[in-house]
Length: 275
Image 1 (cartoon, one colour):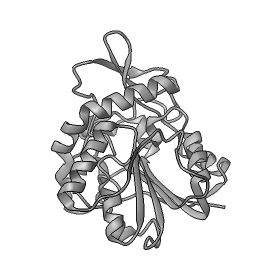
Image 2 (cartoon, helix red, strand yellow):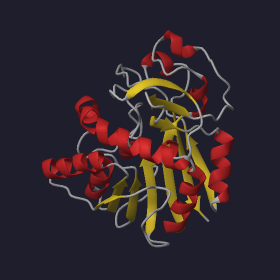
Image 3 (cartoon, one colour):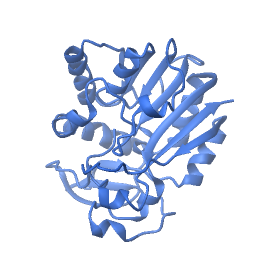
Image 4 (cartoon, helix red, strand yellow):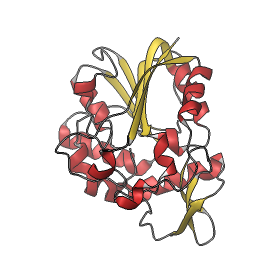
């Protein structure tokens, strides 16, 4: 799911900067961060997300209105970086056959609790999106609402893995922070309206501990990078959604706010199909 804001309140984290972070350090840091933050994340955002609802982004775009996945009834669906798997439970209510996975045991614990509260259970798997433990051509739809893609060093590999488990003609839909936001500070107020670094600088955002060990890592790719990753995996981009900030929506979420949302996109949703 989308980050609730930077800098994290982890007691381990002492600083933040743009620095290199390899694949292993990225996975280790982000698994630990989401495990550690899972309780606080759901205390703060659980009501917004719901137990069985499908919200694509802080702009409150819902799948029931957008229909980005297409027909889901009777389809096998894989949710990447599911968090508490609320989207998969909503899909189960629409007649889909979802499977949800996340790298974080803490997040999957919340998925189990939400299944108990809602009475809607979906299969849960702990896995890394770069190494999917599923057979080739086993899903009709794969999706993620801010899961995994920016939290791994090799997002091109994630695209290839998704293409591998998708059936021909299957749909891959993923939401991320809009790439242009990388050039701006993560601030919902006026200070977040002035670009401070090059859009093309792909140096990761890293929060780190006193021993210089990364505690959270987020990787940036440009819009062109994403299109090339999709194409190289044998898929085609069929739509790109940039949700507008809805009238009357006053809630802030990290860097997302009515102020910023009125003048620039905060989310990009890529709709792809496997050829």
